Length: 249
Image 1 (tube, rainbow, N blue to C red):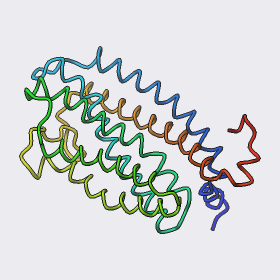
Image 2: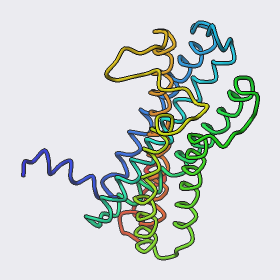
Image 3: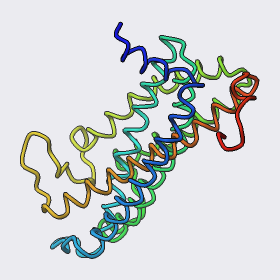
Image 4: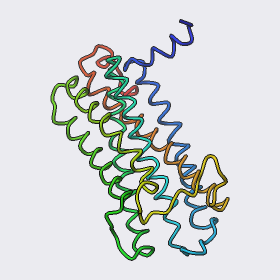
């Protein structure tokens, strides 16, 4: 095993990852603020008016990136849970725990902004559409994970139980993504395609991607800040935690 790989592997330890998380959080916060400010400005003042939906369509620049992030974060959490269950690494479960509130927030924003978009476009705040329903299930999975994690006093048992829930629930993510293809829904098909030319205006697409990257940076910044709190809480009896100064905390 090369020395460089060994150096990276050391960050699987909470004690080694703790100071690194602070640096990542600070950098990600700056990136998130810059990108989200630019993205919101382009959303309201640069992106052209949609010829079918008018000005009301602009909510998609928050709705769509939030929806993407709600799914992406859950998959990442499931990945961390799998690593924790297979390799019994403490930090993996802590990362999943730190990501959960942000994922739940994005799922809620997705549903909330979707309702505001749906009212003028569909004439109703809510329908039991396949994609909306599966996104609601995703929000419940986030809340269920956090509730189960908090209900079990023993951290190790809580990690295992909540990790299994994450792995079982991950099947809902492809259901959300492919729901518009598998069932007749009010949602339109994807306008951003990897293999084919997108049907979205170039300025709209750039704005969407900037907002997505901004949300991504925000999720990293918040998760890194939160995992530091989780590490301190769960490692509070460790010698290295008791030796931290106020500036290091």
